[in-house]
Image (cartoon, rainbow, N blue to C red; front, side):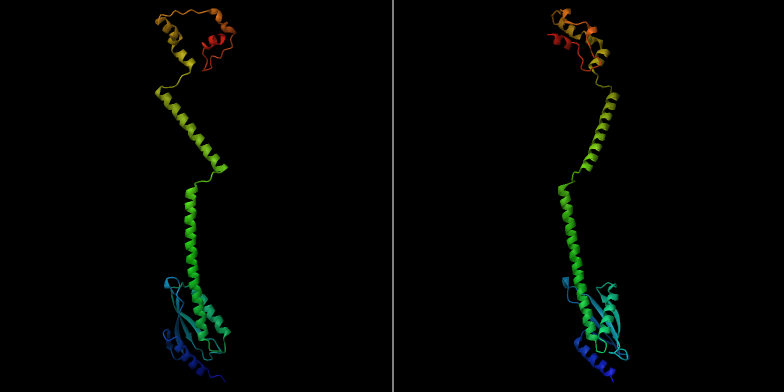
Length: 240
């Protein structure tokens, strides 16, 4: 017949010697005690810590002890369920044997894994920020990549802006009365231009003689007087 009290007493003495700085008796009947479990030092000597409470039941170790979490240090509450589940699994696997040391060791390994995960997440976050900074610098250096789509969009916008500027300029000229006239319009608005060249020659003492045989009948000529570049004097030069 198993002497449960004797097994519990012997384990308690062994646990106290193994964890002298973190072992605390909580009560004697039922036997209950706490053990603070600390991970190995991580980055910047950072550690995580959990305080466990174990309570012997009457038939321990043939039945699992009661396990609780009293406090967490540098750990999110979300880890509580994971640690309790780990304790339950380990207790079921070790039924019939004293198991407190085994349970504490399993929790400490779990905390070491958590420290490694925290370090890994921080490293990934650091690398992500570095990549984003490099990509932002690269985009700033390269500028916008020209594609058919954005070129056509730019071209349409440019042509629209130029058309608006031209329209605005024409409107300002009309309002200021400085509209540029064609040659035909100049002659129609100022009849002094009809004789200006002849008058210039007379004033200079030179007489003007016109050989009418050099000219065709004006009715036989195919003239486009609406052409802004039309100049009657050009007809004379063509006959030379």
